[in-house]
Amino acid sequence: MTTTRRATVADLPFLEEVFVIAMDWNPATAKGAEYWHTDATFQKYLGGFPRSTDFGLVADRGGEQVGAIWTRYFTADDASYGFVADDTPEISMGVVEGRRGEGIGRALLTALIAASNSDLSLSVEDGNPAEELYRKQGFVPVGRVGNSTTMLRSERRDAGPS
Image (cartoon, rainbow, N blue to C red):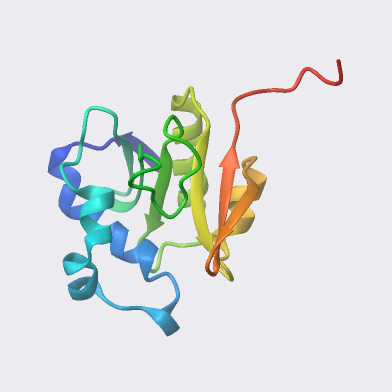
C-alpha cells in the first residue's frame, strides 16, 4: 500500500533524486545527476525547498521512498517549463525506477490535487507515458514549448453557457 506524507526539508535529497528521474524519464536522452545538479534548472525547481509557497508529498511503500511530487510558483519574468500564470503553481513529480506502473504516480497526483485549492500546471515531453495519467486527472493542453506540452488543471468550473 502506498502512503503519502508532506515533504520536509529533510526530504530534499530524495526530491533531488526525483528531479533527476523526472528530467531523465527517457533513457535515450538522459543526461544524468551530475549534469542536472550543475544546471540552473535544478536550483530553479528545488533551490531553498521548501519555500513558504512550496508544497510537496513523498510516497512511501513498504518503508521505502518510491516517489515524490511538489509544486512551486514561478513568475512571467522567471518562467518555468510549464508556466501558465503567476498564481498557478507548477507540478514536478517522479517515481523511482522499478516502481513505475504500480499506481504510485496516480496516488501522488490524486493526493496533491485533493490538497490544492488552485489551478495546477505542468510540462510533459512528447512521448512521456505520464501524459495519459495527467489527462485522466483533468489536465488539458494549453500550449507548447519545444518538444513539450504545457498542461493545466483548472479549479474554475464553468456553470455552462450564460
